Length: 365
Ligand SMILES: Cc1cc2nc3c(=O)[nH]c(=O)nc-3n(C[C@H](O)[C@H](O)[C@H](O)COP(=O)(O)O)c2cc1C
Image (cartoon, rainbow, N blue to C red):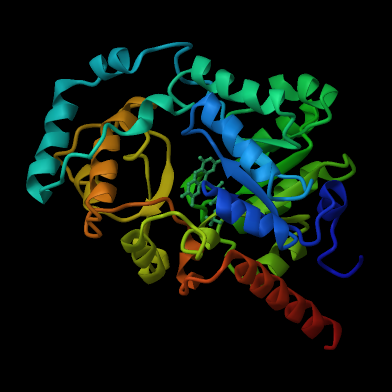
């Protein structure tokens, strides 16, 4: 196998295309893996048993091809806390503000309590219990979306696993490279979800420079939804791309239909960068929740994980009752290019074809 898309990342993973799908949906993951890409399943919101079942489910469908599991390892949260203890830490002023939003927009109560109590970002104990499953199962790639995975490296490598770290700052990349992380995901401000404030075009080449000569692969993330983005990422020196928004409205995605429609309609400036969902800066689609927390009378956003607990009912209620006017979802600036509900296989092949066209154009100029 050769050609401009055959990068060291393809060699490292034994994959055809240097495109990594980050997804919470198993069906998307399997479709991308079987179409020649790589997928990492986000499992931070699932219990250890659930994670083990998902790993088994994927293994039964990918004929030995590799895949990854993504968890969060936040260092800034308590070692151990019950949800009740955390709830008690939410000030009355914040509860009142949440209730005011609820009344103003007629936000329905969720059908069932949101499963926030499982989120690995709540405390260290939960996060480490999730990590144990990934080790037990020897999943080929463990990715940390939040927090440094350096303390897990020795054990992972002894088990033959790779450890990937997602960073938003060059200095985080340098630390992780020095610690021996196998792959660095350099994620820019354009990205969906928790992200820093450095743009993709600025962070990727800086991390590439930091990794030069170390054998560490660098993957570009943040705003990558087309083949032109893929070609540009390779031109910046990256070994591949890590993509999230591109798959949200795919056929296989298990998001509910009104949310998919909202995402297909969304423009770049419908995404906002705010800490009002989780207490960490995060890019999501605009919603009344964001507007209210940006207003002058809003209290200060709570530190993680309290803000996430506070926003959970609003988010779950909007989804349960398919209130498109209230919904919000993590989405990156590249959402502008997500306009059709295509099968994941086609999303990947369109991205690959467009990137190859770019390289052909350069080659024939
Ligand atoms: C709906 C959604 C949820 C996400 N949740 C996580 C997560 O739990 N852990 C994580 O590491 N990244 C998460 N991300 C961020 C992705 O890993 C990825 O870095 C990001 O989507 C890249 O930007 P893009 O959406 O512009 O491609 C999420 C992204 C989306 C779209």
